[in-house]
Image (cartoon, rainbow, N blue to C red; front, side, top):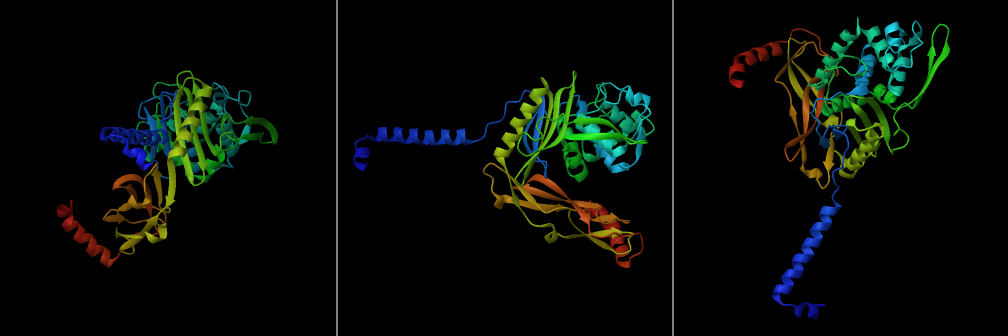
Length: 392
């Protein structure tokens, strides 16, 4: 081989080396995952625990979210009412477009059964019945939905109804819908409901079988790891889908808005998930017990409270990123005010890669604290008052 190499001139050797380097580079490039080609007008896929974006397309464009709206209706029902309460189907709910309850006016049904049926088969009338039960009217419930979206961080979203039927002022974005989906995913009851494939719904008094429904999510039980979440379709919104899938210790959440048809929304989701799973891995970071931080308290029975992250740190890595370049910092207020309940958010832990933020974890109080008097707290509070112009 050495003799053969020596037969080449210097220029020939240089050419061969350049060709080999080009071949190696092209192989490396071809090995990197290519971004998916998505038919939908807008899409996003993120790692679920941090919300770190893997891919996005027009993610901040205002659009109609169709029945992805029902994720918020489900969240409010889970958080604010008893699933064992009774709902009587009103004539307006029974008369809603695209409902399975068209002959059910006056029938009584358990709230939990109605919420599950709404999510499984995307029943518009069920969403209206839930809204009427929980608020004075559909517009009043829509206001609660919009406020909750703001609290979650979905600041561009405006809800006008609980089901996603097209209205000019009923809009959201792929990014906002992702935030709502991530919020719901963190609730075990929401995850359970969003992953149901079928349901028998019974009327009450007397208890008789009313409906048997099967999911509109064609990826459940088909795409490996698919665990939910919600389908949507209207002529104005096109094909919409919120998906959640888990493989190993990686969970991805995807949103597709305005795909050309009902099948394209699923095909696009498969592309997004495949792309995400090809790029993302998760490694363990410090456990929450190692990351305590004290915060001064105004007007409390003692002068400080200790907080820990709500969960262990997980470093989310893309492609060839390295865990030794991951880190974290805590963003804590100088003071908080009593009363405080155990589990209340009092700050945030920011997860970073090369110093850039990749995710956040709530720092929550370890114990409850009522209002009261603490000499040390009063002294520190007075010092804070004096120093606040200097500290900013």
